[in-house]
Length: 144
Image (tube, rainbow, N blue to C red):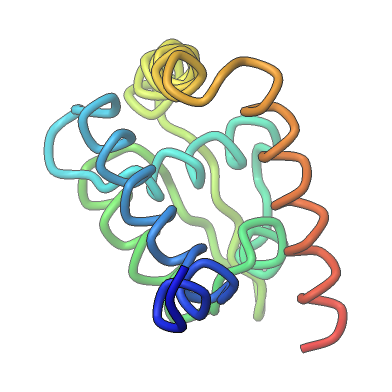
């Protein structure tokens, strides 16, 4: 193995970015619900599990910046998938009926996504990799 290959293989930043691009392609094919990127569906899922969640809590759960959440919520509200209620400085988000329907489609598609990458990577490896990436992200977030 030459030096270039060693650097690329052992660089977590490069490898994780490469993996993210590939898994995103698979997710985009699986979550084909119009003009929403896969990330929006995870926000819908969090709102489903926590009706009336504050924007601050939503940012924490998704590990996103407030400006990103505002952009996402604006788009979802424009599509009539969520409602936003402001009380003082807090903004609370809930799903609409259409948002609930999209959530049901998303949950079904999540199963398809897992089946798709499990077929390629293997079932146990997929579970283990997801767990390791989750744990690594948690550690990095604590330190950064």
